[in-house]
Amino acid sequence: MKSLWLWIALFLWFAIAFFRGYLRSRRRTAAAQGKVLRVRFGRLHLGTNVPRPEIEFVDSRGQRIEFHSQQGASWNPWPAGSTVQVYYDPEDPTNAEIKTTLGVILFSVGVGSVVILGLLYALLKEFWN
Image (cartoon, rainbow, N blue to C red):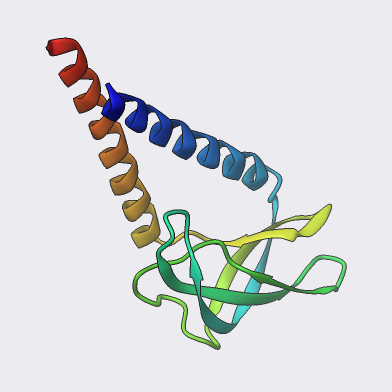
């Protein structure tokens, strides 16, 4: 029974984090070209230290904006000086993020699949016995 509650809690945590990110991303309707200033190591959701880029771009009002991307990967697909696509909220340009790479999408799908399969396994195990 303990493992079932653990899997349910993990599933809910991922679902809430995904939903919050989704709501913020819906407001990012403007696009700009950004430049990777530097890459620093930062923690992702599960506490893993991975390279995450710091980006600068110019918004539609001509303001220079810098932000630390929430995306990270075990490899570094964003070398310093490279150009990236940035999506941002025109009303709040600090709500910005770089275009997601295929590797990051595949990793997220993999982690989500493991959580869902673990939840299903725990449910089946609990109700099968």
